[in-house]
Image (cartoon, rainbow, N blue to C red):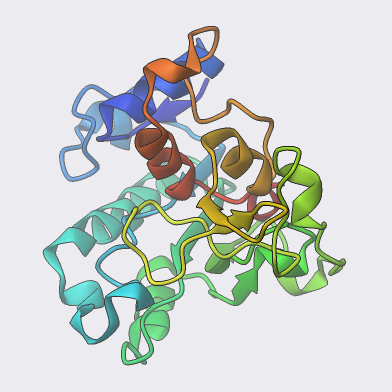
Length: 239
């Protein structure tokens, strides 16, 4: 049984439609976890804390762990430590955005917080069609032992009549307002933003993974779907 702690109501609806048996913890907030969850025996722990406080897209404004929004990361690390008391063999995957250039101490602080190494891994190096540099901490394996492979040609994954001008796509992010939006161009060289199903495929999933299953995808706006997939894991970082 999977248990999710997710504040985004739409994300909860999407995950429930794809995994009907998933349990959404009643507080939907890692800062409000009770003994009923802290004392469970869990086999796998996965965390991807809010990246906006630390993203390089914020430039010098990024505060990293000094941003109150990073309190959820500290709470998640504490929850992991408590769950390990009930299952010392629990395995973990923790993914986080590459911190802004001036946050030079953040990786070391995260390693102390989690008790994990956090190498920087770009999904491109594991065959993905988009750039996605992430700190990836896990005790399942040594990620340096995972063979690298050539990235897939992104044009193969976008709708007919369009192509990725650089071969691969820029990092798909949750915000619509970014310095380097992921774009494709038509035969005349006219650019447009990725459509949601294209973004799903570029991230390594089947088209529609960011939508409520068996529901008309147009009922969810493209902005919402791009936000959901932009907040997700790249497939190669998980599998």
